[in-house]
Amino acid sequence: MSEVITDTAAPKKRMLSGIQPSGDLHLGNYLGAIRNWGARSDTYECFYFMADLHTITVRQNPADLRRRTLEQLAQYIACGLDPEKNTLFIQSHVHQHAELGWVLNCYTMFGELSRMTQFKDKSAKHAENVNGGLFTYPSLMAADILLYQPDLVPVGHDQKQHCELTRDVAKRFNGIYGDVFKIPEPYIPETGARIMSLNAPDTKMSKSIPEGCVFLMEKPEDIQRKFKRAITDSDTENCVRFDPENKPGVANLMSIYSAVTGKTYAQIEEEFAGCGYGKFKPVVGDAVIEHLRPIREEASRLMKDKAYLESVYRSGAEKASFVAEKTLRKVYKKVGFVAR
Image (cartoon, rainbow, N blue to C red; front, side):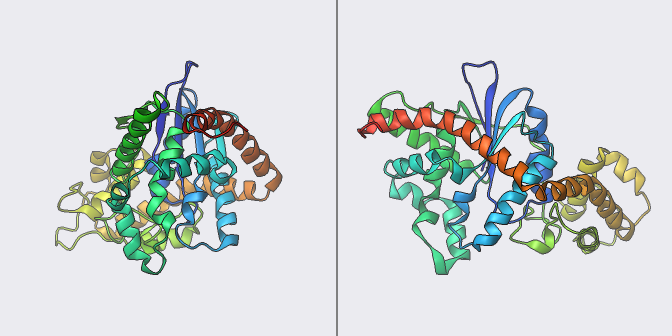
């Protein structure tokens, strides 16, 4: 899911984002998004959720899904999302997401859904399980957003189509029933580093390519092994220089090193002047290992305190449901459902 910022009557605007617990959180999730979330709690009213409803478009092992959902919550907190300042919840615990998702299914056109690039991509990867949920999940994503009456929707490359579809569906619904949903405007948020796969630097880091993906809870020795095997380039120059077009692998490693150390590209180039990639790659690996160490340790501690995690997600679901129910009640009245 993408982040969403929305106006409310309160001084703070609202931010919403979710990540599917279909796999473990990785360095790209953290440096590209999650690390920045915690700092925003003083400025925004923040809602962050585990998007478990979206995961089952692909077959999941039930026990693994439950474990990963709780681990993701623990990792959210370990990454700096204070439950006292942020509303953290599990998507399936807020029934309004699924209910509004069904309503919006009925206002989303077949042709619109069939043009979704992610549907085509996932259908190709999971040809044996091209199910209805895989086809209609953009309607659920629209519900995730519109439940919270957003003013702004960030437009990242992966979610651009879904943001546009959300606007179209909201306009269609309003055209029939009046002013129900705010029409979210495209928004380009300030984002963290765009982290690419270690073994395919032209592809964004993804859990679907595990050998090129560094997971937050991964063992240090496994992280270091992946960095030592990271793709650099095949030229004879063998120098550390930031050149994304001609040296994408090296540029990716420099981006990661910069993100975890705070050093500029110029400083990194100076630090490794005259050194080959054989020295550079393990140093980056060590820096990442040390940066992630407190997150791994805190998340591991939290996973042993199931009662605390339950209190967090129960409280979060209650807060999120309060906000979401206002929108759902209005929608149900407009379409003609008898009040509960």
